[in-house]
Length: 410
Picture 1 (cartoon, rainbow, N blue to C red):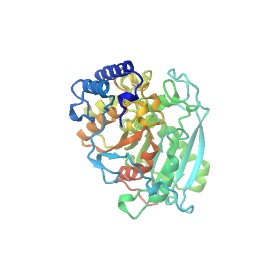
Picture 2 (cartoon, rainbow, N blue to C red; picture 1 turned 30 degrees about the vertical axis):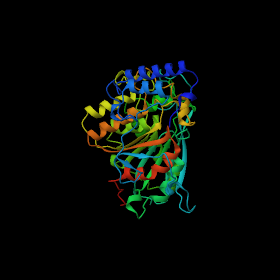
Picture 3 (spheres, one colour; picture 1 turned 120 degrees about the horizontal axis):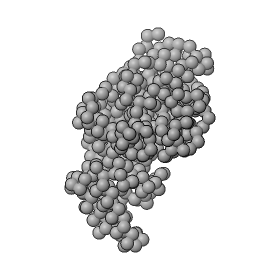
Picture 4 (cartoon, helix red, strand yellow; picture 1 turned 60 degrees about the vertical axis):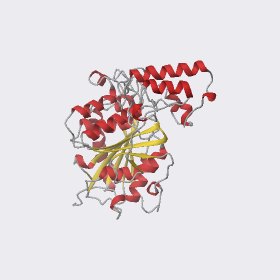
């Protein structure tokens, strides 16, 4: 999609935007003057060609991922494309009401937490008094058997995928089709207790965008003990055994929640080894986090961590979208993407805030280190686009869990 010159307001506006494009791309360490990962102009994309093309024709070239596959088959590893036409995977649609698991909810005091009690000096906004935790135990689970664990971020927030996850679990856990089968696992969905706020100074940023193992420790030492000791859960499943095997533990999120999922596994592979991150915020989103002292570019520093560290025993899915946050396609091109009005706001001149470029570089780094990795580039999609989730999630979940099965001995 493109915008013609006649659609623009004035020529001075064109020149102003072209200048901003040029300056921003030249300042980005990921897009030096001689290389821009990939784009509609092929391997020859540079900051100058993009700015000049926009000034002369009104067309805006943006980087995109080089894909080797199309479709979302669970057998696909590496980089693949979905969209721009999306389908709804049948596994995301509710079926028989008799095939439902048990859903439990519990609340945790925020002020009582050792990790996130809303007193950190970087916080400038209010927090909720309690944190809601939801636990879903699928109907396929037999009490006393071992079950895997999937942690989901952003419960009750914009990127809460617990409903579709529970439906997928109901439908394909234990399926006779090995290309569409999941092992038995328990879903634990965690609310960020951030009073429905996001951005600099919020608890959500502190939890999810901090580059450290703190969030993984919080889940292990505070959330899971609450789950295991909950009276309602113990009454219904007195023999519940959530695996302690890191291979059987995964984390899922979108945007900053996706970054949190990666951080959990990267810094604590003894606890979590499987990552499912849609549009993870591998960027410098919050310049005031204390972890920036060690990782000054925020989530972007995962690229260098992956390149310069020994390979870890992780399995990682991530994605980006054509109209993702920080992309150099203008908001009105996106056709009304939710959140696209923020695109220009998050393109800071520090050069570490393009979600597509960040995920492209991360995919390259992971593949270079021979990680088990899967990267979806969603054409015609927005940031954390639900169409992508309903098309891709079942097969990406199957891919994620490959190689692990619970011990069914009671």
